[in-house]
Structures are given as structure tokens and as C-alpha cells.
Image 1 (cartoon, rainbow, N blue to C red):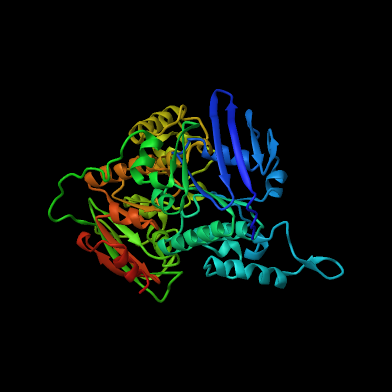
Image 2: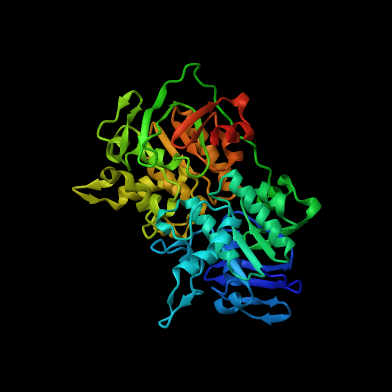
Length: 500
């Protein structure tokens, strides 16, 4: 681990202009050895562009970069690496056909013998102490394809720690982590700081920024709009700089019927992940039921089983009293059940397709004529959802890949809202989304429940679960360990049920 106390990085007047767009406008930033700087801003504020400049992926249009006294107009990827800049990306950059150890030491393989073959045993021995340090529960020899999204994010963190880093850049590192894993990561950040490593911490979870940052730099619309010193960092101050206004803590609710009907009933459902366990829960019309639990508790597996993606070993699923017998997504959709998956880029959207095409994917028949998609119908339906969800896109023909995380999530949701569903399962609905977009997603969820829709919300964000849910179901090893009513909402009660 680096102990280079002379390390200092300065970005001076960095500007990046694309045709018709100023992505960064005269941004300056300084970070020194043993310092944790929080970098915050809404999606589209310029954080990702700034990281690409630091990583040598793109060159700034103007400005300079100085690292420990050496000044550059632009960095190459190799120069960034040579200066000890390591990234933990929000979007996972792993090879799922390789082992954990092979991913951690990619390009730095340990070889032995006359032919210089990769020594897998030595690689595993080198990787294990780092995995132990972050509290990982998977082995160096495990295939990445076998890991959950949260475990893959832990692996990204381990990759960065395996290098002799002078600056570690963490881009939304906790977006798929549970509270206990997040606390472990915050301890790792404190340990890096104590050993003289600089940390640039990018997160939409402002409570984490408040806990670990020595200073905060705020970007808005590509500009540096303010800095906060340690004693100035608090939630309200960060929000005001980020979006220029104060957010309401919870969307307004309408008065509900005293006896809401059960929209989703799951009884003794046994999934492939936990064939010996059985999960039972009931979600009422007009409510948001949070589904909490530790990573590996079986929450996503339960959602996939309910929607019919994965088979089951037994149990019953009912939508508004109708039993699903065929157990496939087509039957679930026909019954009024929709799933907004955790991995919106891999499973919720076709990134190369346009926004309009993605919105209409779930019901092509409604926008088709004589077996062919009618582009006018598609455009009209997509425009309706764009306006309804306030999707920020100048053209419905724009590729979904080009949108911010919050707008991508709205497109993934708009695909289902056109079907007027009875039940929606949200798996990590605000993963990697800024606070402004989060508030909009929460508002949309509340509008849906006010209209009688039932929502099952899977979330690893404890603050989100407690503040947004009407009731909280907690899973442990494939079972629903208990359901909490609002008077009993607390992190302690959720964790007590989660650990069994």
C-alpha cells in the first residue's frame, strides 16, 4: 500500500466541449495524500467526464493536470496508471468467464515454470488477503459469472486495492452494497487515508459522503458550484449546492381505503437459490412494501421467481386473486405483474435501441399494424410516457445508452407503465441515481400507489427502505423472516431479522 505523502493532484481550469455540449466548464479540483474528497452532483453534472479525464480516456479541450509536480495537458491511460490512479467504477468492468483472482490481477498475472504459464494457485494466494480485508465471502477461484451484482462490486473494490495506488477513485461504490458491507467499505476508506492514500469518493448517498469526506466538491451542469469544508458538510448544504433547492422528505400520500385488497400473494415459494426455504408475503393495493435483507438473502431470486424468469420448487403466486399456473413472464404480464430489474442496462433496456423503441418493447402489439411496428403509433405512445415520467431527452430516437442513469430508469419504468400494471416489482430502483432523480422516482411510485398499484421494492439502501416503505418485509436465507409495521421501523429491527 502506498505511503507517498508527497502525492498531490490538481486539475486546473478543465474544460471539455463536445459538439453543441459543454460537459465541463472551467473545473478545478485538488486532492492530496491522506485526504478524502467527496465529489457530488446530479447525473449529467460532469462527474463521469471528469473521471474520464483523470483516467486518460478523454483529453480536455483546455486546462491542465498536475500530479506531484508534473504538469500535463492531458493524461494517457498508461500515465494515469503509472501515477497510481486506481478506479472503482459504478459500471462493472469484469470478465465473467474468468475467476475472481484472474480479474483482480489482470495484466499483472503471476507466472511460473519454463513456459511462463499463469500460476493459478499463486494468484489465489495473492488475492485472498485482499478479499479478507474487504470482508468478501467468495473465494479467489470463484467464477465472476457466479457472483451477484453486489459481490461483483466488492470485487471491483478489491481490484483497486490490489494495486499500489496513490489515489483511489470510488464511483458509486456502495450502490449495490448492504449496510454492513457499506460500513466495512467506510472503514477501508479510513484505513487508506491513514496510510497516506488519497480517496476521491463519488456517491449519491449523501449520508456516506458526510461520514467520510474531509472536503466536498459540488458540480452542477458541468461547473464547479461550490466547496464544503469538513465542518460545513451536511445533507441540506449538499442538496442546495447540487440542485439549488431543498427536497421534500417524502412525496405526499392520498387517503387510502381502510381495507385494501391483496394484489400480490406469495405462499411458500421455494426458489432454486433456496430450495429448502419458503417465502410467503402479501402486498396490498396502494402500498409500497420494502423487501430488505443481506446480500445473498434471496431477494432478487424471489423477484425473478415471482415474475416467472426462474423456475420454482413449489409454492403459489396469486395476482389479485388469480393463481399463476404456467409460471412464465407472459402469464405474469397478462395478469398485471411487471418487474423493473436491478441491472437496468443488462436486463431492463436494449441500450442500442432508441428511447421510443425501448418504451414500447413490452407491448409491441399495441403499436403494430399487420405484424409490423407502426412508427407513428410507437412515437405517440413513447411521447406519452416521456411526458408522464418527465424523461429528459431531446429526441425519442436517441439511443438509451446515451441517457443518464435516472433517465434510463424512467425509460425502463415507462415500458411497463403503458400496460397499466396491478403490481410492480422494483429491484434496487435508485441504484446509481442522483438525489434529484431519486425524489422523482419516489414521487412516481407514490403516484402509482395512490392509483391502487401495489409495489414490492427491493433495496439495499436502509435509509430508502425505512423512509419510502409502508411496510417492510425482511428476508433471510430464502425466507421472509418477518414484516415490520411503521412504528417498528429501525435499522436495528431490520438487521435483527436479516441475520436470523
